[in-house]
Image 1: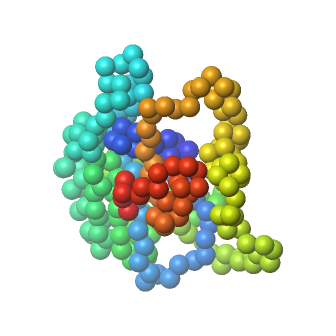
Image 2 (image 1 turned 60 degrees about the vertical axis):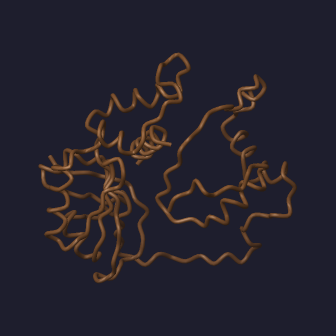
Length: 239
């Protein structure tokens, strides 16, 4: 999953045998008729060229410095071609699954009955390693980086009730204390970035993109930004 996360971050920065294995968190068994959605991360047409292009956008000596691509440009340059995407759609349709292509042609959203998803991916739980092995036809597997969101588990997850104080963030803290406990200063301390701050290297003029693989509340994001002394503007968030 680390490779997958790095790949997703690379795509975000750029746009401001047939067996795939991925680590998952084991969850309780799901009913066969329940609907579910998984994401299929696709291989770019030229991974190294895409990675090089990402680094060029943050290299002041590069002509591509701070010059970002639109999602359509990413799709045209690095995304999977329409013919290959149609092959994926046709395959999943055989299992009564719907397939949507995200902008950029580097990720698919596959939705349908949980039992059909398991059949389409020929999913097998490796209990000892807490992971799921999935298998796709060789004609498609070579274009797949990973599959995200497919879970299996035979045991019901154990629920541990928290009898202690709530874990909700303390919004009564002042900006500096909030930042140290929950925000930017906590990140700085954990990753030992103070040496950079001492040199006044604070990321001025830099931009990053974030890819979320789970749901979130825009109001929570606004509160977090406000408590860290930033503009609580959530118009750039797209769910």
